[in-house]
Amino acid sequence: MDVEKLFDPDLVLRNGRRAHAMQTPDADFLAKIVAEEMQDRLSVVERTFDHAIILHGHSGLMAQRVRDSGKAHRVTRLEQHADFLEPPIQGVEDGVTDLETMSVADASIGLVVSPLSMHLVNDLPGLLLQIRRSLHPDGLLLAALPGTGTLAELRDSLLQAETDLTGGVSPRVMPFADVRDCGALLQRAGFALPVVDRESYTVRYDTMFDLMKDLRAMGMTNPLMARSRKPATRALFSQAAQTYSERYSDPDGRIRATFQILYLSGWAPHESQQKPLKPGSADISLARVLGQDQGNRGK
Image (cartoon, rainbow, N blue to C red; front, side):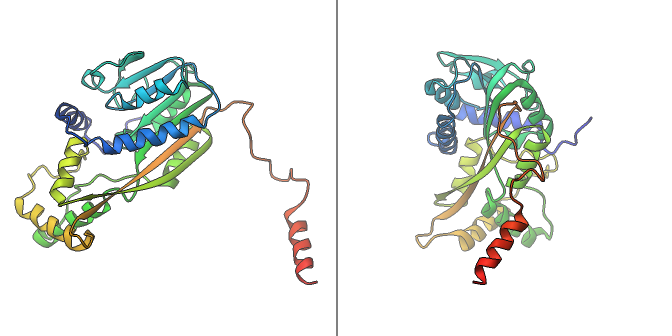
């Protein structure tokens, strides 16, 4: 089935390759935060996996952490382009596959870790299904992606500025999924014990232009198919920067930028996993418990 493309895959790749080539100091702060959080979540899993895939990490950061954790006997990173596999990491295997494809055999992987790439996938339900099929029974998926609320201040400022200047708007910040959407997608793909939670990170900048510079260095510039092909004017950005400062600055004049990161986990089904009780299988009925409670309240 053909899926309508929300993102331009060629532009996504160009943005990522440009960001990787720039190697801007400290622009990987969000990737480091997410890698540390995912490593912490992996550390509490009381088992070791035979083979781990790091899916589209765009750097070796996550692969190094999984390798050093001792949670996987074998680690492979799969990237969109060979550029992202440089420099090589000792003890980590490499491979290339596009964002939409999990190019491994069914039931062959114990652990899949996807840091900050799933928000750029056009067919996320299809990718999650491929990942679930690639996991052997009781295999684990850990993923992180920006969620609703990410860059809300920038979105609002650009929208207001464009409305004031032109009377219309074009999409300039990509949409992000929410917790409920991601939980439903994990269930739809057949994952057992799905969990989705959210962490919010606030980063401060001197100006909106400093934020946009970081976004460019992170490969997070606008990849939408529906984006305007006309170059944004200097007047638009100047107006947006003023609006941003007026609405979202702290007393010291610095502005705030929000990153809401959703952390997902799900297991490939296995008979040993905990399962919810079937309706009617409880030993004591809820009505009976409530009745006893109401009786006690009346005494």
